[in-house]
Length: 279
Image (cartoon, rainbow, N blue to C red):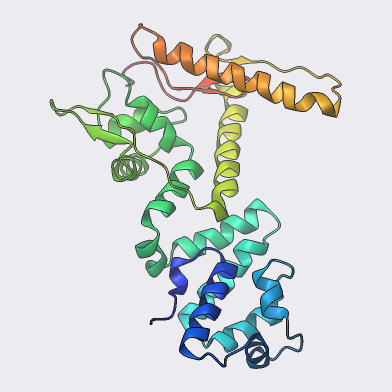
């Protein structure tokens, strides 16, 4: 029976639980107390408490666990990154840890789909390019795609985005060779699902901030209101906004007019692409 592969995990606590279960199989006499002694710690319940999320690992505690697990140098670095990802207190810190985790070759081999899903949501123009493919004049030419977006991106960025969209089965070629939307699935690990959503909203809000000063008034619409609202009303307000979103999606999906610009809605809307061929 092989030991669990650390690089297949994004939750270090799940790895610890599986590692301890494996260790008990190969050595039934091994105990939590023995692990803690290896780690140079005193509390006999430390491993159980960490696995159960009753306690977090400190920096020194993580180093003790590295010793107790007898990890290689590469595994030790990855384990520390998993601890950082779990305990980061800000999106910036989580993104820093995620970036280093995703750069690991062994992680990419084990988590390609999940890593690609994180990239899809964290990069504002990738969902835009997928939506752009609904246009009748869409061309899977990176230079053409780059020219369509507002703000414009580099052709290399467009090429990488197209490649990712094909890998995720979000774009495909139909029988006549045209690139069209497909119904692929974006898989995002639960450990970073919230971070992916945060990155998505940050990216779109940055585009909204730019649009106020760069997009002509007749092409955009910003709507805001300042009111007092009891906390008990918040679920109803969320339901109302969700209903507005569903209505917008229905209107756009059922429109019989030719497809136009990709629009972003946040209780405001603004274009993220040109409506037709750009020079």
